[in-house]
Amino acid sequence: MSLAELQRKIDNQTARLAVIGLGYVGTPVACEFARAGFSVTGIESQAERVNSINAGISPIDGMEPGLQALLSEAVQSGKLKATQDYADLRCQDVILICVETPVDDNNIPRYIALQNALIDLAPVLKPGALVIIESTIAPGTMSRVVRPLLEQHSGLKVNQDFYLGNCPERVMPGKLLTNLRTVSRVIGGMSPETAETMAALYRHIVQADLDPVDCITAELVKTVENTYRDVQIAFANEVALICEAVGGDVWRVRELVNKSPGRQMHLPGAGVGGHCIPKDPWLLAYSVRDQGHIPQVISAAREVNNSMPIHMVDMVEEALQAQGLELRHARLLVLGYAYLEDSDDVRNSPSELLVKILRAKGCMIVVHDPFIAEYKGDLLNKAQGCDAAILMVKHQQYLSLDLAALRSVMSTPILVDGRALFANQPAAAGFTYRCLGVTSDST
Image 1: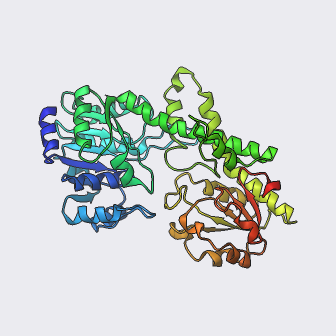
Image 2: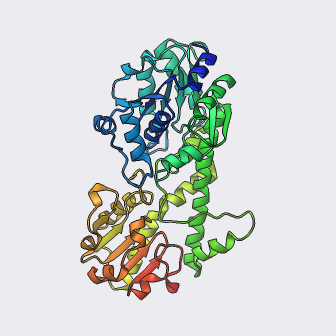
Image 3: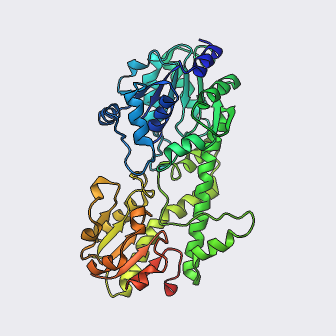
């Protein structure tokens, strides 16, 4: 099948699609293409997730507007089905791969899921099919990893027997469908014609700009954009630490800095988590590792952002000491365990590191998070007898938290705020309040 024939099938929605990996990226992608009229087969390694999707139940908790209804509609219409069997992909015209691409403890990409998906797909890859990598990968991965694996295990050749490209996802939990529909996409193709065919596909679900480029440009754009965010957040966190040291208020400073044209200082916070920002800077840095280049700013930003949960521990210890209490054996309430507000996503959660450090120091930890089954429950019951509460995540539920009621059940009225959620409320409720980026003398 030629690209022209494939594009005709895409234009009239008769192309058969597959999505490998039904997580935070793959599930909404599969649902959106099903809504657009395509027949979609989803491949997922977890049997529980396959069963959930085929029952029309979203495997993603947290607040994801519209996703549950869209998934239910896609399954009921017969446009979407999930399976663990790659043999079901023998007739698929387009295959989108949306699997995780983590880095290890040495910040080296570990593409086990991606490599397994490619190796399992290759023997059943239909001649003339188009394979699209949506996973975020280090610059050069398409040419050094993806293409060789597919060609080796399929016996087919790119641009002759099948087509290949990458279109890195640009979604975040809580806004999956909105991002998918309204955020522009960079579309990398192994040939210009492949990129244009991919653009024709994405026009069915994306209402924003689609920019056809080569694969290396697409890889660079995605890793650079998340590295930019990481560096900017690190700067904000550094300013927060400076404000604490000199007697300032980073939240007021940020507000006034951003009144100057062309300035957009990011938000500081108790840590940077998720699947993308802690990882993608290392993917970008890895692309030049063999050339002996060590990106200085990227490494420094990662160090600053990784240190923020540790700084939160220091703030808690200082607040306890001011009340004559020791950190060791303190009973502490951690508010929020997901990495992002109103989400159940715990990947690289700053709270995980915070809890690990506090437990190692002998603290008794109680965690509350309204979106994570293990940590759900009545917040005030969990707060009983706690010596301090630590706000790590800005969940909506915490916006309406009755601080007076919280104070009444705690042993010691200490509140350490890593997101500036409570502003000046705690003092009125009788709390000793510590806020990230604000000198303790002014709280």
